[in-house]
Image (cartoon, rainbow, N blue to C red; front, side, top):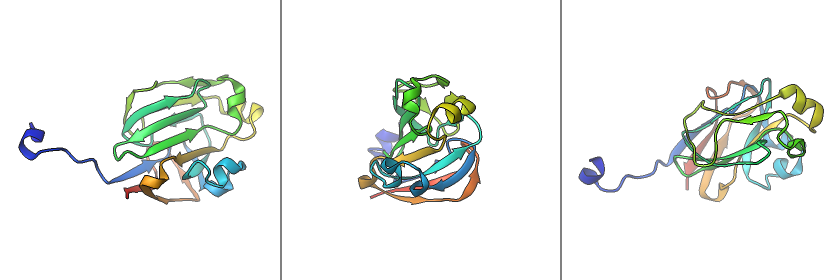
Length: 164
């Protein structure tokens, strides 16, 4: 009804990105993997997790859940595309210790469960448990990041996005 009265609905131009897991927020440049630290995939932040409960940082849609469940791609209401990569070299775990709670096309709200993982197993079998959160379409948005603080998944603001 509103569309009929006021014409086309416009996409929001600003969006807040929330923490994806409880832990310590750090600068993306501290990730011990050049793909992330040198921002080859995009700008962002990382969280050193204290538990294995990964939640949605935005209201939006799941673009992809990797077959090994170690990474999830999301699209927020502004069109921002977010990659959550749980740990480093976790792809080699072949999904062991990971459980996905969403699939491609799922609609999510901030704080909705995405993936749970066994943090102790990741620490044992992967290079690092640090979890980068990367904006993969940086060319379309301006990213402002927060760093160096304790965060709670789905509750603490970690980035703000403005569409260019």
